[in-house]
Length: 438
Ligand code: MEV
Image (cartoon, rainbow, N blue to C red; front, side):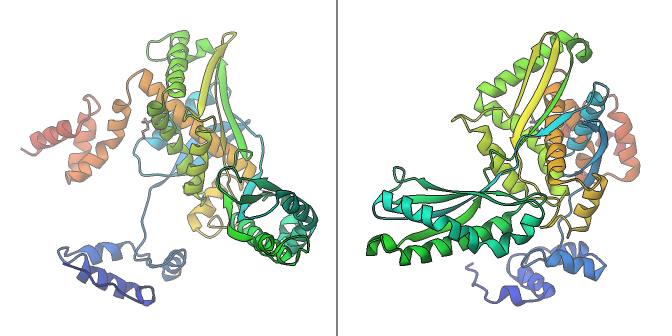
């Protein structure tokens, strides 16, 4: 059946939108409207706040909001908030935190905080004339964004550079204004994009009046003005280290454990199929904290994966070695985060998350997020080279399987007890539950 387009959908009330969906796409589902409404918050102002984050909101989509305690980072003990649905992530982070808490904790350091944005434009003419024009117009561009930059300057930020870049070889007539920014505790997306659009406008207007340009040269075409989510100079490093003998685990000597661990990382460094999964494990920790603190996880994901391929081949973000009897495990990643602005102060849970983290600066949050990623990776690789991943994973997944099989609270209790001594798999749970029920 062909479905007719609907106009004015965004103007309908929430109820009307649900009615339309029910009669159009959910005809066979008796209780879809009820399920959607079940997640409405009874506090109407809180509900409205969520609805106003975006367009066409029908309901709220819950994710568990949990805590991984005992993270010692640069000598301070944090409890890290995480928003994530994957069963084993918080347990793994907590385990890694405990493990490294006994071995000196995590060290983290911000290596740079530079953000980037670009005005992409087409210029057809003599390059030297464009270079001279840019030299002349640059102070005017900075002047044009002065009203936008004033508050940011008070906080110690602002525009830190504008460069003319020639990309003509890649695409005929393509040039850029490559701009750098310091945005202090805000992620800065709106600030950067507003500055870029103002640069573009002033640049084009000034070109139209530039006497040395011919008529064609005056006609600069602005293609787009947008920040880059690739921020290789907004960089943070997280590290752990300890004497090799302190790594003894699962019947392995410290030396054997370190050897296996370093080799697993070498595999992720050399083999892209493994690197992607290895880095996905890192992102389990990173995304969970980024989301809990109201930051943009898509931006973070895009930037970090680009960084993982910066040398032309996708590789591991973490590295490990053993030198003079000392095991080291570290990671450097780009992270553009904010602790003011955006959703951070708007979403009540992001606010709480930041309070739990002792109201960190953006730099502090970069360190915490990087540590969460490193810890997650340590936990995953440790399991992979010892017990295998499924043991812990399936144990944490048991409740999901029991819920799928609609186990009662009493059945759940009995099953949790039973699976303390048995391996969890979907079929094993099904069978054990059947036995219990019969
Ligand atoms: C699962 O979400 C993440 C892992 O696959 C990561 C890894 O393999 O390193 C366990």
